[in-house]
Length: 142
Image 1 (cartoon, rainbow, N blue to C red):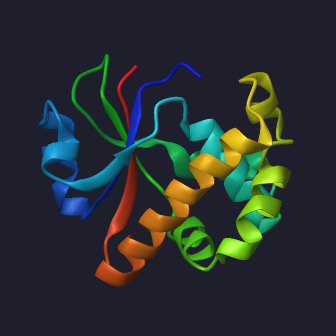
Image 2: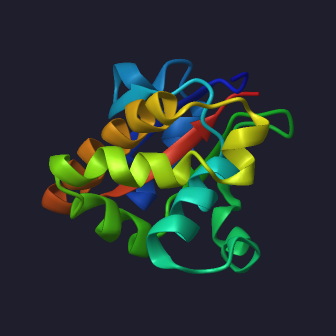
């Protein structure tokens, strides 16, 4: 797990401020998710929505960038946030187990426990974003 990343709850109008900040988690609600990248989230989206991974990739392009070398901000699709917000604690382990079988997670050497740890963070922030009527962004630093 090598990418440096944060999940951030904010509005689309705050995208530029997020990538301009040296430490977005000091200003915006969120959590560190080093090791999580857009391809792995797209794999989760595919697992949850029974959609082809390749068909989802267009929704995981940066909406803002600090510079050509980063950071890059990816807005997670509304469909994914809605699905995540509705995952009950009882179902998280099963969903994480399914997600852990995706090629993108296998290539990164993830275990089902790794997937469950990240899924719990995603679910919590999706619930916050849904309640506050905001979006969830993945800010990737490298």
